[in-house]
Amino acid sequence: MISALIDLKRADEQGLVAQLTSQLRGLIATGRLGKGRTLPSSRRLASDLGVSRNTVTYAFEQLAAEGYLAASHGRRPVVTVDGGERIKGMGTVASGARSGKPRLSPWASSLKQADWPMSYQAPFKPLRPGHGDAREFPNEIWARCLRRSALRAGKRELGLVNRARLREVLVHYLATSRGVRATADQIMILPSAQAALTLIAATVVAPGDEVWVEDPGYPGAAAAFRASGARVTGMMLDEQGMQRMPGLAAPRLIFMTPSHQHPTGRLMSLARRTEFLQLSRPGRTWIVEDDYDGEFHYDSRPVPALQGIDARGRVFYVGTFSKAMTSDIRLGYLVAPPALASTLEIAQRHMGLIAASHIQEGLAEFIADGHFLAHLRRMRRLYHARRDHLAEELERHLGGMLSVEVPSGGIQLVARLTRGRADQAMVKRLVAAGVETRALSSLALGRPRDHGLLLGFAAWRESEISAAVRTMASRF
Image (tube, rainbow, N blue to C red):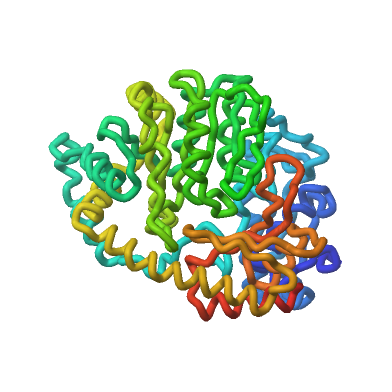
């Protein structure tokens, strides 16, 4: 019976139709259901599998559209291909073993396929790190800004709209909020902060160049630099963040998150910042400062950006709006060293890393009219309370098993495992229970030295945080 070859899981997020379609496709592709084989009727197969008839009907219709089945009204579907046979010029239907392993570039082969990009499914579940609370965003105000920008589309095509307005607005905002010193010509608007790292890597990193990154740190940085052929070296952390390893010559580029180290949230001291600046040389050793959530600082006045104390043009400053606004805004920015601004602008266009102009204009209006700062002030108060609440709940329910590092800012925190447990196995158990976290060991460049959980607090209300921590406690 065909039903004996099919295993449907009702709790699977993929859904019954997708599971059935995929499994039938696999049975045909591997030859277990050969050409000419007549399948059961949708009513019979639905009964055998214990699912609705519509589930089977939709699966049959999809496979017929793909060319695997011939189906007509009143007749049972028939398999139309053999395993390995070509279907309508769309390639070979075969198992991975039969078709051979695809050839990848050295860079693609080095990626941690299961961990980057993060494979979590929507909708988000508590306590997913790296996100703010989109439910608290002033969508009506933002929609008005976008609507007015869209109505100016005709003028934009004629070149009558100031395309540099967002860059000019950012010059003032970054100077007052983060101490960044720049002109509008140094600012590039990009689809994301990751796009900024890709642009930097393509512009200043050659194959074989050495790049230093934090370890543990942001995986997207190492991925971007390796794509340009760099030799990426992880730098250990201490209480002040990234350390310089003695005896190593200065690299081509240093990537760091000094305001809130990713993932630990540690703040790099002024002395440590000065040490790295003294190590760098314009044209020889560059520094990339990723200020991914620098808008959120709670316990004291925010420390100015590293770029603001650089008097010699050695620092690339990277920022994003996805943490402070919504994750789907798809806008980041790069403040380039003056000597590289024109080259980066040319490279940006050749690489196609262009952000939509109407969103840029809408954001410029949103910032200039004061809505952005008003939103930030409100979210700082909210996220501060949520950070404290998560830390208190973890101490109350898991104090003997987790050691919490409460960061001075940001939107997530690290809770280290105090016992000899594998954090990646723990993450799988928690995700299955409805709590999304990220394993600290998965962020290590080499062999992990620490095990713990990266927990987001910004996107979740206090009641949601409490419920998630109680679920965590039941799984430890």
